[in-house]
Image (cartoon, rainbow, N blue to C red; front, side):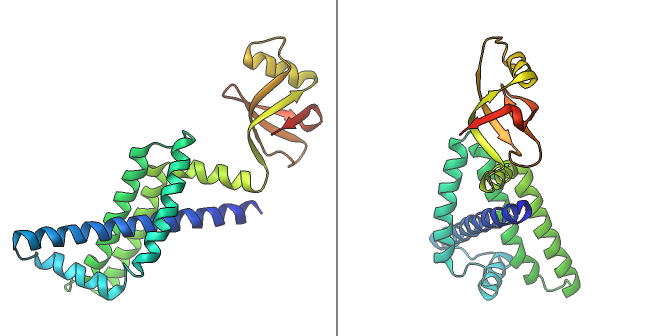
Length: 216
C-alpha cells in the first residue's frame, strides 16, 4: 500500500514536471525563432535541425495537454511554496534544467554522425540525469514522501497529542515545560505496529500507542 501510494504520487508529480518543462522548452524555441525572424537572420543549421527533429518526434504534441497539465503544476508549486518546504529558486531551476535535457533529445537524434546504439545510450543518460537532477535540485522528494504517507493515513501533520506515563515526561523535557499537558507536532507511522514516531519541537521521539491520544 505504501509503495503503491508513493508510486502514484511520484508518477503524478513527474508528469506535471515533464509537462511544465516541455512547455518551457517549447516557449524558448519559439522565442528564439521569433528573434531570428525579427533580426532577419538565418537560424543556425543545428538549431533548425533540432526544431525539425522535435516536430518529427512529436515532443511538443499535444501542446494543449501540456499547457493544461502545466496549469495544475503551477497550483502544486504554489501549495508547496505556501507550506514552506520548497523555495521558488529550486523549483524553477529544476524545470529549466529538465527543459534543457528535453531539447537535447531531438538534438542527439539530429546528429547524423552518431550511431543508433550511441544515440540510445545518450538518450538513457539524458533521462537518468534529468531524473537525478529533479530529485536533487527541486527538493520535491520530501513533498512526495509526506504526501504519500498522508494519503494512506500513517502521517498526521500539525496534530495535537495527549501523552501518559514516561512518554509524557519525555515530551515535557523536549519542550522544556514540566506542566504542559497537550503538545503539537507531526505524527508518523501511526496505526502501524505498537509505537508511533512523533515530532515535537523539531525533535523526534518514539511513543507507545497505548500512551498516545491523537487529535488532527
